[in-house]
Amino acid sequence: MSVNVVVPPLGTTVDTLTLIAWYKQEGDFVQKDEPLFVVETDKATLDVESPASGILQKVSATAGDSVNALSRIAVILAEGESLTEAKPTLLVEKPVATPIQAPKPAPALEQRKLSLPRRIFISPRAKRLAETSQLAWQTIVGTGPEGAVVERDVRAALSKPQSAVTPITLTTETDATELVALQARLRQMGVTVSYDDLLLLILVRALREHPKMNASLEGNTVTHWEAVHIGMTLEVEEDLRLVVLRDADQKGLKALAQETNALKRNAEAGNISPDQSQGATFAITNLGTFGIDAFTPVIPLPACPLLGVGRIKQENAGDKATQRHNMWISLSFDPRLVRGVLGVRFLQCVAEYIETPTLALI
Image (cartoon, rainbow, N blue to C red; front, top):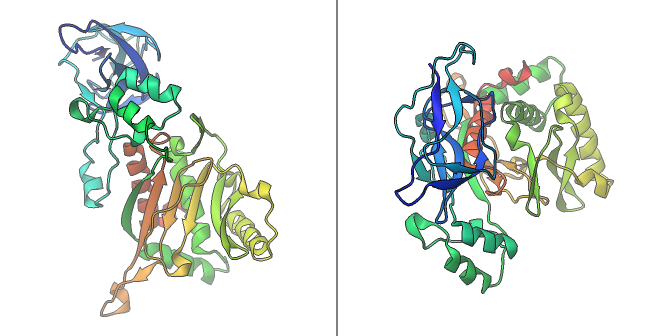
């Protein structure tokens, strides 16, 4: 049975709100209680959660529209239900609007002990002042209700020297035993690949499942890319430089290995042109070869998400049959570019592919 998506009442004095954005598009599957859209009042920006699970349809309001409290702005259909088959929509339990704040991780994510970035909310007046002044308000500590950034916080920040947005970094430990075994099996079969090559293939697969992670931020402009251009950090003339592997999603494992080997040879010879360092839509830095266990990756400019990879460490065990290999991975991103939950799910996806790398070969 279909369910109405309605604008929540936010008190007796608030009749009209502004729809800021949808987190889902018409035709997407939505999960009950996940953030569905954002509304703005004169006091704060608020997330509204989905009242049911199903397919989002009949979206009647777009970003920037004024919407009335308790008005219907979309419908959620049960899976397999069509618009023609849908029975009259019912207004179920009252939707809940919550301040934009750090969501609780799912149980599977809690087991990995991922650190979640906080979600920030800001009053409309403060936001307008910050954007007019080109101030990165996401870094401001709010003093308003429930930690909201209000106008006085923005004015106080403007009176201080400005600094860049600080990334939020997610870190987790993953079991790389199967990754080590897969590389050994491939080498026995005459396929010469490095861990970097396997990690590139894993990134491509993870980006296919989470295309919103394939994005960059320049100034205040966020761009989501169809082409996957992965930047790799290589040592060039005693320095680390980002070298871009273009259209990585169009290449198989052997092609990735051949191209990365060519890039590494050029880097060793100092033959990397400025053009080869531009245009990354995602980046990876592997410092495992330097003996580094874990680190906070530095986001390249223009900003795009960056995966940091530490060395693979073998656990001490009594016999070879029970020996395990562990590896730390970290994901850095600009909070203006990637929502915290999306970053968590993406890192979880990468970790799962590392633990079962043969799935990336399919």
